[in-house]
Image 1 (cartoon, rainbow, N blue to C red):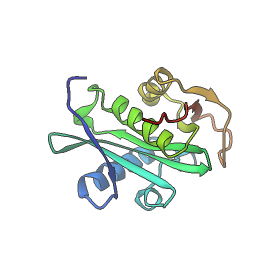
Image 2: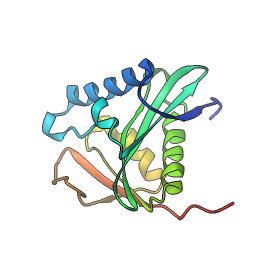
Image 3: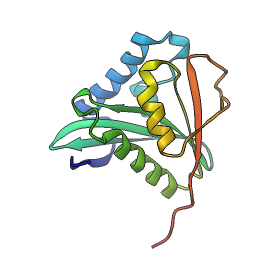
Length: 161
């Protein structure tokens, strides 16, 4: 990736992050029946169990991602989204790597996710598979859903420096 990306923890008070997060949630609802949409809205992203990170390139928001702890050592990836202007530039891979690093540092030993099963989600599933995620059964409060794919990945413990 030749693009220089800065990724920061985000409190969702800035309009660019709020707008991209809201666009992500509304985009999911535009193409998927409401009962199969599991993206967090802004209120859900502000839950104390959620850590949100935003990616920036030259002062412009390039993407957003979050993880939500659901057990002492488990977390779910939430609301991964790359802004349209930055698609294909490695931003998703950078955000995912950052989320994995931050989760590991927070004592998370496994990451879990739900993503779409349709053609619109091939790029996301490919990113996750290339990062070591494997398909698994529904977890947590999820029920089987033909429009969902569930994945998980073990994280090695953080190394002390």
